[in-house]
Picture 1 (tube, rainbow, N blue to C red):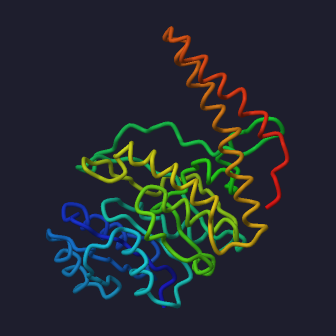
Picture 2 (cartoon, rainbow, N blue to C red; picture 1 turned 90 degrees about the vertical axis):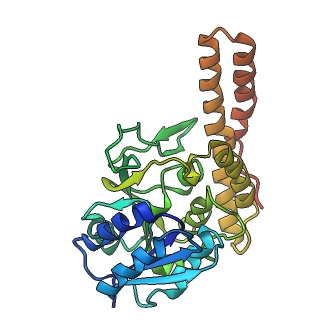
Amino acid sequence: MPKISLITPCFNVAPFIGEALASVAAQTVTDWEHVIVDDGSTDDSGAIVEAVSARDARVKLLRQTNRGVCAARNAGFRACSPSSQYLLFLDADDYLEPQMLEVLCGHLDVHPEAGIAYCDYSRIDESGRPLPAEPPIPRYVPSALGMRQLPPSEPRTPLESIVCGAPVLESLSVLRRSAYEQTPGWPESFGQHGEGTELFTRMALVSEVHFVPRPLYRYRKRAGQSTSDELKKARQSARLRERLGKMPGITPAQQQQIRAALRFVHYRAGPLDGVMAGLRHARRGELRRAARFIMGAAWRYPISLWPVPRV
């Protein structure tokens, strides 16, 4: 009986899938299973997985026609053992540090209130070489008249922070299966960029989300990967917030929580971004553009102080 099921969508990643599989095999936790869903690859990805599966019965290959990453994750979940406690949806081109499963599963073991434990990460290039560290993505939460950034020592990441862009990312997160099963799964109609935020928002409505401040994951930056399309990411972020405001299958109380989180993003975090953008334009001497950003922030911020309308 595996303690954790790893599910990996796989599409034309032959140069990288072997390293991902090896990083799972090197884990200090050994009671795992790894379901790889070949989503219609036209390269040797499936053959590489097949060869590993022949040597290790914990590795299972599932093939399907190309249906997208969310459909592949859902198919992988349906194929995994129903007795596992935890889930990890691992990307096929990334790499786990040897203690990732031990640390994150261990955190969930001693924090039954948490449905998600996610970690920090380091970056590597296409060849696996370390890349310079980037500033950490902040976790913002409301304060009395503004907002504050959560320190790494404060693990709980509330709903407002998740909706505001906290780095609760798919492959960084070990999920408690019982919390995941209270959701409809990955949103296949939405597509990529932000699909994790929709799922994690649903999970945050029924459990806590905890940050473990250790870099236990190596995220690969490479040409052509879907997460490098900034314009698409911006459009998907706008779509995501619209979807969250109309999320089906939740209670009125949960809908109220989401409305409060979206209000925080739009009327408090948004104005701060506007002021910062305005100051950048002012330093460049673009005073008209600076004034437009700052005035937009000035009319939006006071709305954040009003009570959230009841649904």
